[in-house]
Length: 383
Ligand code: GDP
Picture 1 (cartoon, rainbow, N blue to C red):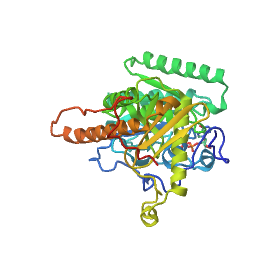
Picture 2: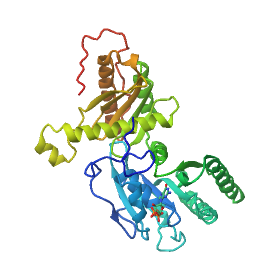
Picture 3: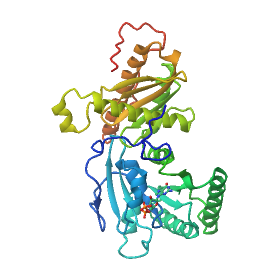
Picture 4: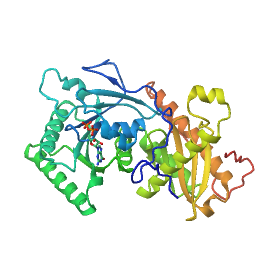
């Protein structure tokens, strides 16, 4: 089964209605903005034309990869507020490659001080020597100011490289980057490397991993997912931020790229179906601009491979997408019931997080039904 958009190459799926987004586009700034902001910040840095704006547009604004060919290069710091789910609220600052960190106009204390992660984008199709020296400069400067920053290197545009070449480029970049840091006596800095392209799901996967590192409740979410899958005969579960298709948590079994892509496709299909056929209250839906896709949306899709995909909305922004075998979904009622427990537990995580400021403690508990148990009180309200 393929859900590809005819106009986009490879496996890119970008069929969201444009209105299904996070709200206002980015605001441009030329200097520090409101220093009281609390959202964790992700800095996107890299040389000009390395692909920073494209990444931001494709992942968070549903721009198709082909449209990025006509993006203007960034000359100013561009701030983008991402307020998608209650867990994932952050800002992305796209910082032009030519910026001089030692220029008095560049307030590095402020910029790096409130930064959660620094993503450095390296164009793998170009000569990357200059990029590597900029990387080292950025990393050492940022680390001096803020030791808790996570450093992520996106070896980008790898769609243009052969498989062998990808591995070789990654090895070479990793070697040179770590050697330079060691030579500078900064061997305590850890860099994570990701091979990315906007023409497939690798950029979404890489961003997912970066965002997860900024979610303090990640371990709790993973634990909840582990509990729900083991009690529902589910093989793999992802908690997705629906608009960006970033998964903010998954269970502890390893992530297979194909499964992730399948789940992304599932989200597209459900949103498309909801928008086309599911408009229940046309006036309300128009006002909200998101069709009938709401926190009651749910779907089972059976594939001819014997795999079943299950999607259920957790709230307006988050959805649980699961993969299970055909025999695992014999009792959909149990899955639905366990899902409700999961959703209630997630709500408790939100509440606990909010109470944290008041020094509140206590982990959410889930009262799950195990597959095969009596299902008197189950309801199956799938659509
Ligand atoms: P910026 O100056 O770093 O913001 O770079 P842009 O986002 O403007 O991108 C520069 C060029 O790289 C554009 O023509 C994009 O279409 C192209 N580009 C971005 N990402 C990719 C990618 O993953 N693969 C390929 N082949 N080209 C890309």
